[in-house]
Amino acid sequence: MSQPQKISHMELQQRTLDTVIHIFLRFPRELRDQIYSYLFTYSDSQPINLAYSHLTALDPNIDPEHHLSSRWVGPLLASEMADSFYGLNAFAIASSSPLNQTLSFCRWGSGVMPSAFLRQLSVEIIEDSSSNCVTSDSDQSYEQESVADERRAKLACLLHIPRLEKLELRIQKIWEGPLEIRDVNPLIHQLCQQHPRVEIKLAVSFDNLLQEAWDSWEPEFGNGLSLAARQAHYVEEFKPAGFSDCTELIAPPSEEDRKHVEEFTPHMIMPRSRRATAGLVDEDVATRKMLQGHYACQEPALMRVNLERHWEVWQKLKKSESSL
Image (cartoon, rainbow, N blue to C red; front, side):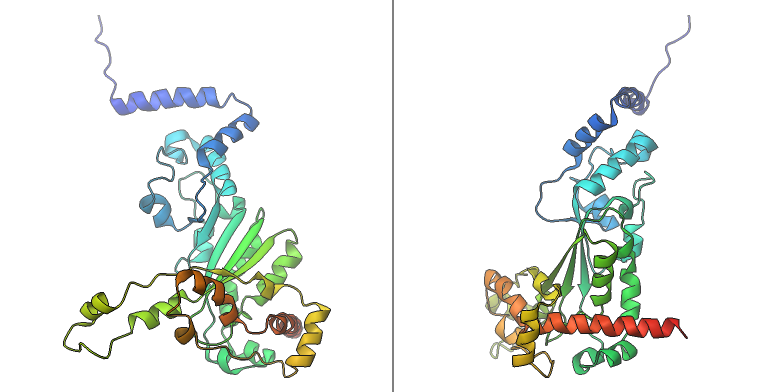
């Protein structure tokens, strides 16, 4: 009589899972999608960080049962679940993450790229700080002298997300002065033309700029103490305010906007606001969040008119370049 074959715990677990998967795949796809919705819809108000390290290491609540892993549930189920995971939730990509690589990286061997199924995405962008942004009021000189095209090339992949429904561009300001978004302006117009149903939002934050000012502050007394000790005794930790909605700035200009600009800012130059490091740094989080938009742009009507003009200049320049 042959001895019963010993089966390891891992093998037994895998056999049980294979049986469950075999039965599960007999369910109609519509029913499976409802189950995926229950498994993968996250109620957190904050978007999920799409960075690879975050999904695999920093957040244990994302796929703790390894349902998204093709090595665990097989390629078919993994691809269906990844489809639901990316389609049901809102995601964010930080400025430190390479955008194209992040959107096209298959994390669990499911064969599913995030860009194929994402519906809600927020992308953080560091404000263009090239020297001519501050000094140039001419759209043509801005295009000829700046590195805007290099920045746009890195964002071009946002034009190729077929199921995208909501896109939020989060601009992190890093210099004092009016908001500079001419580098992303063509992208916004192209998205509106190619994907008219996509809801595009613009948000602005001064956190990086204010954090730097906050950390560099030193009291005039107590010079015998180390900076860390002085800050610990006299300064609270900086509290970020996050991003404030400024979507009104990228709306098409109205006739009222044009009349306002003609009457109050005929020179078409955006007036400078008060220094954020002087006016915002001492405010509480709620007040900063409310005021950030006003510090970013003093004249919303002028911004809308100028962005429309810049888009026309950009199109003419690209047309002349292509004819050479």
